[in-house]
Amino acid sequence: MATPSTIPTHKRSRELFVRLSAYLTILVALVVALFPVYWIAANSFKFDIDIFAVPPEWLPRHPTLKHYDEAFVQRPFLRYALNSFLVAMGTTIVSVSFGTMAGYALARFSYPWQWRKQISFWILSTRMMPPIVSIIPLYLFFNYFDMLNTKSALIIAYTAFNLPFATWMMKSYFQDLPVELEEAAIVDGDTRWGAFLHVALPLARPGLAATAIFCLIISWNEFLLSLIITLTEQSQTLPIGIAGRVTQYKTYWGEISAAGFMACVPIVIFAFIVQKHLVRGLSLGAVKG
Image 1 (spheres, rainbow, N blue to C red):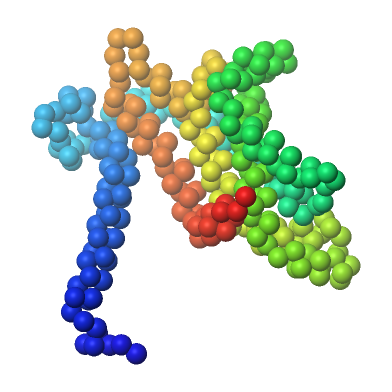
Image 2: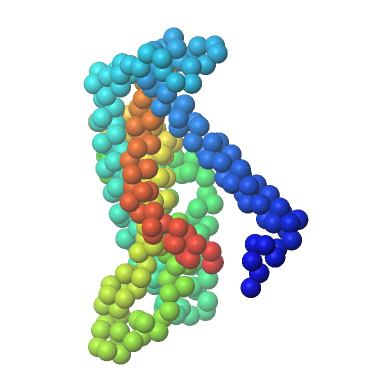
């Protein structure tokens, strides 16, 4: 076994250079990814005149909660946030529930005439369609059933776009699980449904976490469908409320920064809660087609 003293100097130097390069790359990536969040947070505590100061103020010299008061007390941003939370959670629960069952059926059941591949491709192909193409049909559909300006309409619309992703991702994950465990449960007297609930589903928790976080992020940040389907404060989501502070006469950057920073918090908290399952779910369930 080689010891540090027996490794040639040039080889140790090369390994040190590779390691330092990797750390530097990670540091640069973190700065690029986190700086916008930091800048929004810093601007949310500045007065309007300080936001556009030259040179820029990297730290608020005179911190203020003025913009948070304007956003969450004087304006209904809490209502927007609650609407986003209800719509995102409802969409995630429905999409993951149906996507899990559909993915399991595609991964485990046999179909005649290679229908499995055709169905799987059809499900995946729906993700290729730009959401804007479906705006007019969705608007007419919800208008006919008197569902415009409702959170139920948003949940249905978001589920239509999240369900194919959830189905495909869970199908890939179930294909990675050994089918022998479920067969053993069935031999021991369990039903197919029982084997799914008691064996496959517990093993699929990492895949469920990864699918749920993506569905939640997509639903939480969605803008276009919410802009068309909802027109009232009682039904609009947080992205629409934030965009509404860009008016014809003025852009309220302080309120936008305060609301934007607070909009990041729920997603970050949820990601931390499921992080132990998230990486494993992405590395196992999403790498096979």
